[in-house]
Length: 177
Image 1 (spheres, rainbow, N blue to C red):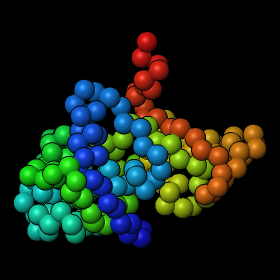
Image 2: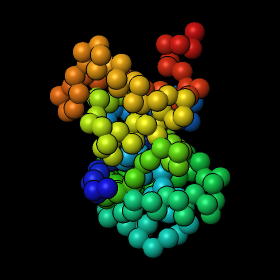
Image 3: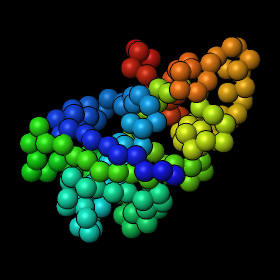
């Protein structure tokens, strides 16, 4: 998995924290945004544990499967705890930056942050397809979903059609009435 660089303003992360505090589901556009927010959770966990490199908010790094060791030690750290640890002592105009190689795969990764994912239809056998498959979980077969989309004429890859996926049990705001 290649590394992706991210830049997130403290102000934006505070907005996300505020939404999460009142129980709003988080809808994310794109797999890069997904990996960034999920990585920020694990980077906040590293900071809470005082791990090396976690104090330099301008050069944060997360390895491919580093989350596995982090999840075993203390699974009780919430998203709010983690995100608040990242922004502690920072100003709204500060930027959190770093790189992530987070590898999200089915049957192992459990999403911590996002509830809904807007993305396009990805190429088979890609790491992006693995992320979508992991997000959908066992309840949906991503291959079947993609075959149905292809049969209906949806376009694939970067300039293709977009779709909205939701985690099991998470409703869209319009469905709450």
